[in-house]
Amino acid sequence: MTPTEGPAPCDEAVVLSPRWLTPVLAQRYPDAVPVRTEVTERLRTVATKLRFRVEYRDRTAAPPALCAKGYFDPATRGRATRAEADFYHLAAGRLPIRTPPCVHAAVDPDSGHALVLMHDLVAAGARFLDPLVGYSADQATGTLDQLAALHAATWGNTKSELQQHFPPRLAGLSRVLPAEVLQQLLDDGRAGDVPAPARRADRLLAAMAAMDTLRAGHPGCLVHGDLHTGNIYELADGRPGLIDWQVVQRGIWALDVGYHLATVLDPDDLAATERDLLDHYLDRLAAHGATPPQREQAWWLYRAYLPYGLYLWGITRAVARPIIERLTGRLAAAVARHDSLGLLGV
Image (cartoon, rainbow, N blue to C red):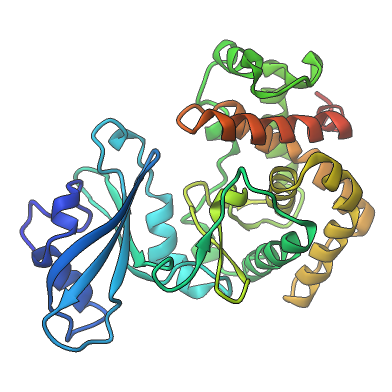
C-alpha cells in the first residue's frame, strides 16, 4: 500500500485493487492473497456501497465476497463523517448486537475520508430491508431487543471509555440548517397534513434543545440514532441486525425507541401497539442487565423524544422523496398525536 492510497482511499478503484486489499486483509487473514475482484452491485445514496467478489490465489478463510462503504463520489465526499468507521473500529466487536462482520474500518488522517470494509451479507443469504415496505409489530420486538442489548451494554458509566468517542449530537445536529430553511422543508409537503403548530421550525429547534437538557437527568447509553427499516437487515433465520451507524451518539434510550417505532410502523399499528412494545423493550433492557425506568416515566420519555426523528427527517434532502415523505409523515403524525412538543414545554 503506497502512502497515496492510505487506510481509507477515496478512489473505489484503489479499494477494489488486490494491491490495496492484500495488506488490509492480512491484518485478519495472513494467508489471503487476492488476485482479482469483480463488482456485483454498486448502490449510491449519499455514501456508496460496493459489493464485490474476491478471487484468492490460494485457499483461505478470508470472505469470498465483501462490501465497501465509502464516499467515492466527489459530489458527496464532503458529507463524510468518521462516526461509523470509528464505531466499527472501536465498538462493534465489543457489543452484544448483530452488525455486519467488519474486516477493516479507518479514517484517512489527511482527507478525513471514512471507509468501512465488511463481509457481504447479501452473498451470505441476508436480506436488507426497504423503508417503503411494511414492518410488523412482531418484527419490531426483535429490533427492540437489539436496541435493549446495545443500551444495556453501555448503560450509565458502563464502557465509559468507549462512549467518550461518540459524544451527544443533539446540539450539533440542531445547527445544521437555519430556522427559515428548516421551515421551508417542513412546509414542502413531507409532513403530510399534520397541523401547522406541530411542524413549526422554531418549536422543533426548541424541542431539540429541551431534549438535550433532559438527557442529563437520565442514564446515558450509546444510541444508534437512525433505526428506520432501511437500516435493518434480516439473516436467513429472520433475526435482525443493525446497519448504518453514521449518527451513533451518547444519548437516552427513548431517542432510539421512539424514532424506531414511529418510523417502522404504520401510524394506526403504532397507536395500537406502542404501549405493549415499550413494555417489551423495558423487559428486555432489564433482561440484558440494566435497571429500566418506571413504566409511566418511560411512557413520558418515549413521547417526549419523538421530535428528534421529526427533526432528523425535516432536514433530510439527499434521500429519495418517497422515503422522505413516508418517514417524515409518520414521525410528524406521532409528534402531533402525543403533543410531544407540548410535553417538552415548547
